[in-house]
Image (spheres, one colour):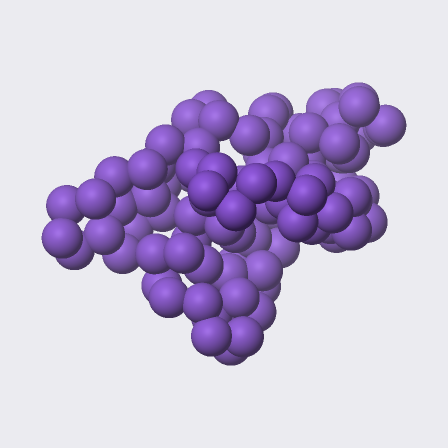
Length: 103
């Protein structure tokens, strides 16, 4: 499994499945942001998510939390702590999505 973070993040699985993620902006391009993403994905794996689901869901949640943080403190000022602080809202949003959504 590969998660290539960037303007549009890409998650790929060994079977050739590729999923694009468009959440997240330049506020995530700070030292420590990738550590937050890694911790989130690891947590999802520990809770029983498959590797692909953990990577896709982790990328979406991380990016969405970054978007929320950018709206609050600007992209320039977004720090890893801000991303973590916005996880509850990002989790709430994904929990309210229809079960058959893309995630």
